[in-house]
Image 1 (tube, chains in turn green, yellow):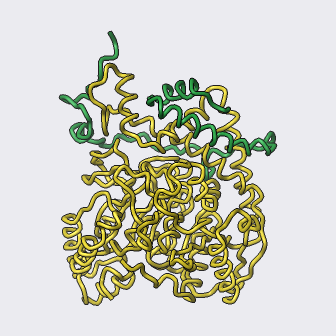
Image 2 (spheres, chains in turn green, cyan; image 1 turned 45 degrees about the horizontal axis):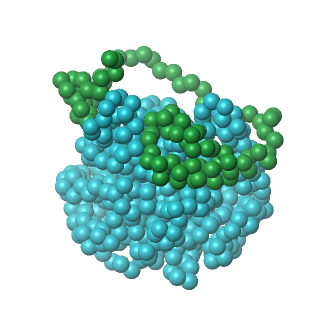
Length: 95
Length: 485
């Protein structure tokens, strides 16, 4: 087995997800079968192959640091699930 | 022929000759939507008022003699592309009420071109899927057989064109999400070279693979829409600063002397015999027209699926971290603290496939697994790219099937993610390498389901692909067939 149920629970926490018990069982089974399929890659010796992270090789793209208008505050907040007087309201973080 | 059945280039001629108005075309398309949308469900959001306003503006422009090829043409936009003031859901409950405060570059370009926006097309949630069954708003049906899927993830965009619910449309392609639905729905769909079209305002799934592209009823419409959306845009620093040619100039009916590579691995991978037959016939047609074929090898193509289903979920797990219920989108109510709010929001807001991929990506990037999965996959990605580099030394374009099977039945693969992933086996390598590719109809199965022919080209050689596609289309009739609805 590639991934155990406790590991699924740990990864869910890292990903800020949660699951019901039934979902945890189903995900554990499905992730295992997908990860077993990925084992194919072990057939290849890639020790001397450089990785490709981007489809088209590019260097950093620089631009002049110009001040441009940004999105107005009311428009930026217009999609907030809980916006209040120019702020995003969230549950209390510090006790 | 009804107005809604026509192509953009036909309608453009009628508009220039003042034989019709954009308003008449738009009303014709909107009536068609009313007639068939209940059966197809190609759209998540319809924007008829906006369409009628835009058509009136287009008619003024045409009167002034300022019409371009997209002026007054009704189109659909995949709901992963931001449209200012029109909700953009990505097929997800988590963005059900998201109204973008800005337009994507492609949306801006099409507005500036005078196009008419019929609505936002249905899709697999966050473009993750091959059947459009993963939409939080219900599946789209294939116009050729309502019990079958239209392909995915841009299934709504493809079905809308096939069912004449718009004239052309935009999709996005991360692992085949334009080409595979084009094949399933019997239309033309193109994934441009990575960087050809700005991704600014395209909601990110896997940023090193995503690319916006056009759907059309024929090759000319596809080239015209590609003209309208291509080009560098500073707000997407991966968009490439190369001049945009007029792609319709590539539509010359002549493939004499062109060398087409047929990857020898293709026909060994569980391809449906009817699909293989249609593609082999298409190769014969191109040979009769004067193209040469050459046997090429893509020895690492067998690993592409594994590479893709590591890299795409890794990038997705990072990109989708932004959906936290704070700045926009859905937030779960009645939660205890911040962590609980995050977890409840994401649990309730995302569908099963999205959660599966976030889990897979988070796992593959987590401490102790990064080297074995993400880094390993990225190294194999190099080998896949090099396979193409070698193949393109011997040929101008590659010819292969778009998908291993015709459209499958709704529900057939929902419980087996790996089987679903195999639908993309022929489309994925092109995204990993960043190359352009196109699918066009090349036949029908005994049950009347369309089959797609895929043509892949080297970097920024969209013109060679379009030339092959055009020559084939001009000498065949498949693109003229319409589903009976």
